[in-house]
Image 1 (cartoon, rainbow, N blue to C red):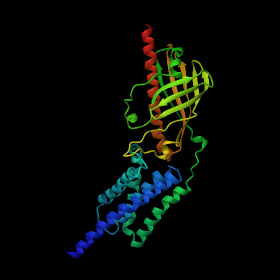
Image 2: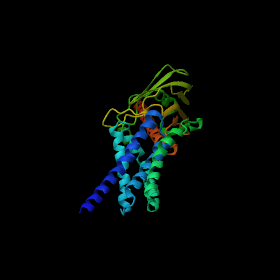
Image 3: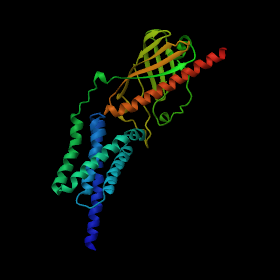
Image 4: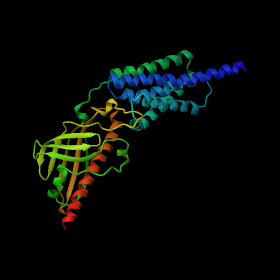
Length: 325
């Protein structure tokens, strides 16, 4: 009976350590990456969850006849506790963790899978060495990652709407528009910044447009004023990209200086039927890596912002035209 108790105690301790060690190391690496290096990149979003899944599996599954499902679920539990820790330590908010969840779950599973393949043939020393090397590889990768963003990382997103009015009638609502109603889109109810109204001071090139969002204002000096065909502007100042949902007033570093709006424009094209095709374009840089993943989110959000503004302009113009009849 005593031998059984010792075995159970060893098993429980192994399980606790298989969660505590990867999580503790992961929290330290997250602080190192986001607060010291100020980088949100491959080491944080790809390699860290992979290592969490792999080291948790190596520690929990070594020399035990546990079902694969239990070992896999332990890796997922480790990731969950790691994420809860990010919330408790006020390093991240709920929405950003939800956005990162798909890639985090996938990489944790891959880490579990790779470790599970090698486990049967690994000695005690081999397991310890593999786990140690995996853990140390995380800050090493973070430290040596290139943080520079190249010029060709500039992206553009264009959205459009057809308005039943001439470009001349649309123009005034493009340069400035009245207050929009409360958003109905789910994405904006989560804390993502959304447009409220737009004002302009002056006219022509050099005028300053302010597009007011839920988190502050974009200050947009006009660079092209081709009435009623094209309004183009640079971005001199911009607010936080979102307000995080958390237990605290969380303001992670990535809210400032990682999604950067460079310039934008409204293009008005007169259609054969006399109506207007209104296109809104934003050029921006997203410094959060991996780009292939995070730009899917940022492109989606920019489209939602565009559509909120374009639909509002369409409604304003068409109501005005209907009223004049």
